[in-house]
Picture (cartoon, helix red, strand yellow):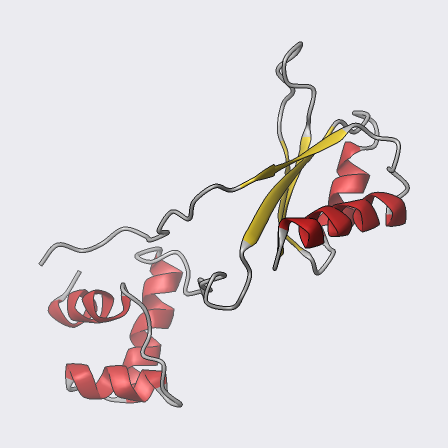
Length: 157
């Protein structure tokens, strides 16, 4: 990794500036052009030096205080189709299949639902169950008890 790439990663690893033209601000901070910043990021993505550039919202700052992982015991022959439909719903942030661990853990489909309250999350899970025709499928909703800080790998300068 060259010096400009290292400085660019160090500049953006904590987040992009919250300004109208973030790439321009980053370029000014690094003493390069906006086109160079965008080109470097594209190249580093293509080369696998960085995996992605994405938004990590602070749900709490947006008023989202309840996070519920809905776990479902969907019949194996239906789990893929149900999971695809569930994961496509706007109120589901992520959805995935996991193996059961019988006899204690019969659940094989997981989806995260966010809301302003636990009651809102529970109502959303009930709506999902009704809309997808899985109201009779055993399920539980596991709520987060604390927020853990999410971050990627950090360069050490």
